[in-house]
Length: 495
Image (cartoon, rainbow, N blue to C red; front, side, top):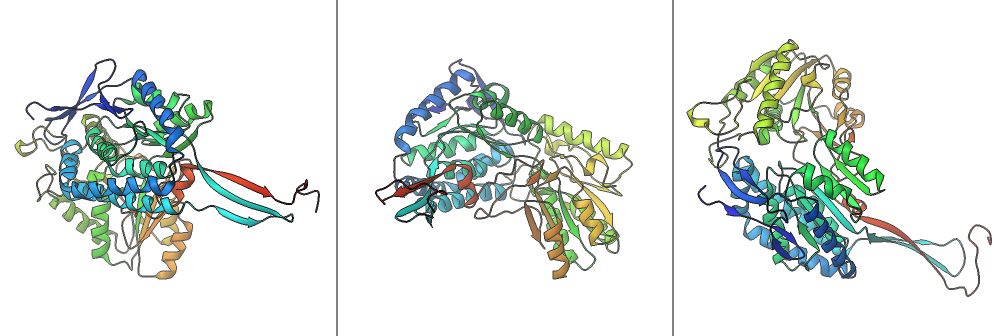
């Protein structure tokens, strides 16, 4: 792209360069072209943003929640008006097909409408007091300055999951988006500012994790950190937060499973497996990277899956005929190739794919074939470790019990699914799978914003995004007692 646009941080309501003057390039993973130039910020910029957020908090927390929500409604309307251009820029910077980018923007819109509606609820409780002439209730209070570190695979949806509930609860925000996809977050923050958020309520600082992200986590003025990313980095974030007793919300990795039983609608299961495994080029925490298939239908399912995976059209996500875009960057590109070699070394059978695409049609991009491994043992690394790419392992099972055992045998617990016509077995799997999300006759991707999103085990620390559960992350409970008896009443004593 000739003369790429230069973008800036938003701090205290003003668009400013990094104080060190440094910048980095945001490149299209399908072509290698520069999409934009962004500030390479460091601890100085983080400090300025946190100070701005802390100052704005004093007034923003006192704005009635319905008034805060009205600003969110205006922002959501603007998102809808600009949806197509926002989706195109998203595909340019991170590669997924335009259809998916539109869905990413729509998810932000949906989250905005839902959370803005909470501005007229934010319910607490009233409860009978145990003493006469006494009133008891609980209310939600904001936490303070919230620091957000977001990933590149859903560069507008995931920031919306964090920012909308935080704002409606009365918090102020500093966000550091992923360096691989800062443009979509920039657009999102710009719209919030245009919608009327007071200066300092929302602050955007771009840069790299070890420079800006680490400084945000460590800053003593930040009361809450919400991080979405790898489990390894999540552990570091949790340790740093523990030092300062910060609230910490983690949404980490997954190694999700689709169980296909012998009575499944195979056409439906194949469609779901293809979408679950290769949607967003497998770069989703909810991607279906394991397919556990009953032995009676294993061979037929595998043959048909391979045929359909080989037929996927891979290329630039702006091409409406393309079904799968590139990997995000060279590191991820090489990681996928390394895991293909690991699978071969473990004696898994490469049923299809396994190679980068480096022909003339794919020059300049990080394109990789849709890859299917067969004959996979559940203990193999390719069946245990998160690859975050278009690689799926197909594992044979004998019955529902063995399928559930295999499904639960990984360190993660984000999403699982089962394809069956037997309602009894569906409910057994629903109960026994140790995951935060479960689907019946649908793939492991496609969560809706009004239900809690998050997982068990190494997928996080028990917090949840989305739905009213998100309000528990971004608010604190205050218990209030009003004694109008006119005398001292001692709880648990004067009974």
